[in-house]
Length: 284
Length: 284
Image (cartoon, rainbow over all chains, first blue to last red; front, side, top):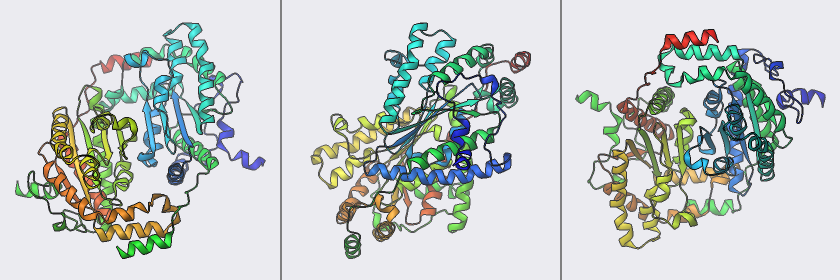
C-alpha cells in the first residue's frame, strides 16, 4: 500500500483540504514524482499520451451506452505559467472530438448580466467528454479580489458557491481535477523577456502584463486563499510546479491518467446478434 | 503555371460548379496527387501536420490583431467513410485550442423549432479558428431527401438557401472547404464487418446501418444532387476517394494546407516599445 501510494502523483501534488497554503514554500522548479530529468520526462509524456487517448476513447464509448461520467480539468496560474502550453502538449494527445475546451477571458456584456457561474455551466463537458478550462470561475475570486471588481462581501461568498457548484458536479459524474500551475516570479520574467526577443511571439505579449507583475504578491495571496478554501475531497487542487515545462506536461498527463484509470471506463457491449448482423452484411 | 497547378490538389479533387456528378465514375480507391503509396503518404501526412500547426498558429495570432479570417472544414460521407477518423488523424495535428469541432446528429427538439441552418450558425468558427463539421447542414438535403423528412418542395428550396448561406460565410472571411469522403459499397461492408469482429468496436456499430445500406443508391443520388447544386467557386466541394484511409488523411491535410497557404496569415506586429518593455521587466 505504501509503495502504491508513493507512486500516485495525486498524493504528491494534492493540497490537503482546509490547510493553509504558503506558495513561497513550494519550489516552482521541483519535479516531484518525475521519472527522471527532461529527456525521461518527455519520453514518458509521449507514452502517457497514448494511454490517455486509449482511456479517452473508452470514456467516450461508455457514454454512448448511457454512462454519464466525464472529466473537467481546470487550469489556473499566473500569466506565462503554461495553461495554453498544457492544452497544446497534453490535450493535443487526445482525440479532439472528445474534448471541450473553453478559455475564459474578461466577462462579456452578456455574461455580466448573469451570476458568475452562468458562463461556466454552459461550457461544462457532456458525458464522455474531457472538458478543459483555461482559466475558470476561479478568476472571480482571483483577479476580482486583486482588482476589486466586486464588493468584498460578494467575493467572500463566492468560495462557498464554488464549493457547492463543484460538489454538484462531482455528484453528477464529473471528475473535477484542478491544477494550479505554480510559476516563479523570476521564471515569469524570463518567459516574458523571451517573448520580447522573438517577433513571432509578440502577439502573446501585452505590456499590461508587466504592470500586473507589481500585483504579484496580491495575486499569490488570492491564490493561497482560493486553494485553501476550495480544496475539497470531491474537487481537489493540485499544485503543479511549472517552472519546467517538461515537468508540467508530464505531471498533468500523469494526473489525468490516474483519474481516468480510477474512472475505469469500459467499452459497452453491443446489444445485437453479431452472427446475424454478419450474415445480413454478407448478403447485401 | 501548368506545372504549378498540377501540383495543386485542389485542382485535382474539386468538383466543377454546375456540372453533373456521377459518383459511380469516381474510383474510391484512387489516390490522385499522392506522393507515393501508403508509407510515403503517411510520412508526408506527418510533415503536413507540422506545417498545418504552424499556419494554424499564425491564423490564430492574426485574429488577436483583428483579422477575422477563419476556416470551415465540412466533412460529409456515408457511414464508415472516415469523418471521425479525419478529425482524429488530421485535426489531431492541430492545437486543440484553435479548433471548433461540431458533430451534427439528428436534430434535437429545440433545433427542430428553428430553420435548418440555425444550429449550424451557432457552431461556426470564430475569427482565427478552424471549424470542423462532422456532418452538417447537408444532412438536410441528404437523409432528409432519402427518408422524406420534409416536403419535396421544402427540400428543393434548401439548395439555394445553402448557397446563399455559404456565400455569406465566404464574404465574412470564412474559407469554406467541403469534403465528400467517397467510400465504396464494398469497402463499407468490409469496415462494418471489421467492427463486428472486434468487441471494442461494437459501440460504433448500429444494426440500423445495415438497413441503411439498402438505401445506398438513393443516398448516392442525393449526394450527386447536393454536390452538383452546391459546388460553388466561393465554397467548393472536393471529392476525396476514401477507401484508403492513409490517402484520405493525406488528401485532407493537403487540402487544408493549400487553403491556409492561400490565406497566408501573418503574426501581427506588436504595437509596443520592445526596448522599453525589456527595461521595465529587468527592473521589476
